[in-house]
Amino acid sequence: MKSCCISVTYSIRITSMNTATIHTLLCLEHQPVAIGSNPKEVTLFIDIGVKLNFDSVIQATGNFNGSNCIGNGSFGATYKAEISPGLLVAIKRLTVGWFEGVQRFDAEIKTLGRLRHQNVVTLIGYHASETKMFLVYNYIPGGNLEKFIQDRSTRDVEWQILYKIALHVARAVAYLHDQCFPRVVHRDVKPSNILLDNDLNAYLSGFGLARILDKAEIHDTTRVDVSDKADVYGYGVVILELLSDKNALDLSFSSYEIKFNIIGQALMLLREGRANEFFAPGLWDAGPHDDLMEVLHLAVVCTDNSLSVRPTMNEVVRRLNKLKPPSC
Image 1 (cartoon, rainbow, N blue to C red):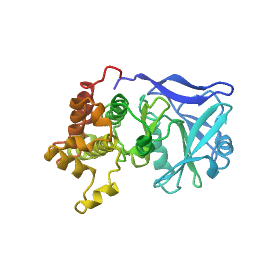
Image 2: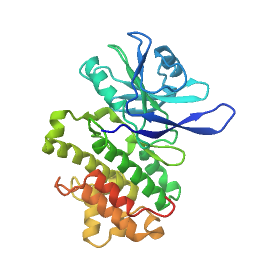
Image 3: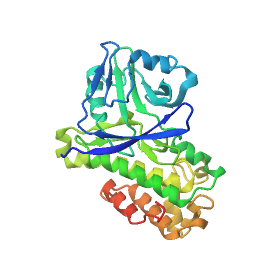
Image 4: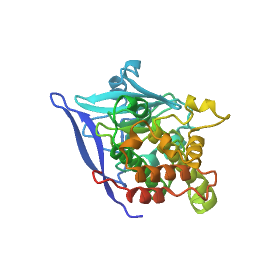
């Protein structure tokens, strides 16, 4: 596999200035650099221009003070931390015992640390000991897609923005599946694991359930296909939520049969010729109708019960590229 450098964006707050964005060219072969010594070693994958060690991380989070908490997930809480004046990072504190031992944690995290894509959050470094484990990510200031969907009823969002988010997420998942070695299956593609910056560019995060495919699995096409297609299904559900402004298990579905969900609603409305009712208020009226219907059909096929019917994420990207609005 050829090495390549891809521009990665992360946001910083400069004192006495507005929010600024710096673009750093990062290579896939970038070797991790360890700072300090055990049990306070912090391994870095990226030089961010300031000293970063265990003590500075603990201090910047206020010893993981709740006031700095910006999110909670299945594997731990995430904190905003100002490592130096103006430089913000996100620290994900992991529940000790999440991995089966520090050595396995080291091996898998070092693989994730090599991921470099403009729509995947950047893992800056990590710490792993018997008592504490945390990851250091670039800080994305705009919250996550789940909150964006929840708040969208308070503002008009153009189709071009929704399309951009859908394309960014598709590119990120396609990168994990087909451009990484070893390949990575995310296994938890959902709105809360998609972050947005202030320009509503999307970044895939939440690699807590990520599975690194070993060589045996890569050659076993059946196992790889099952894993890949689980991410495709998750992506399809994300797009349905994005189009409808509804959660996958929205309470409005309770009036239908048991286990009825957002996929069932989309299929029902398509079957009855009422697909326009699926879209968020105002979205269908603003159009374009052909593009909206194409993306709805794409999301539905991504969630098909048959794995063979679901497209690959590269196929999803190709179909979305054909729809590219003029302003995107």
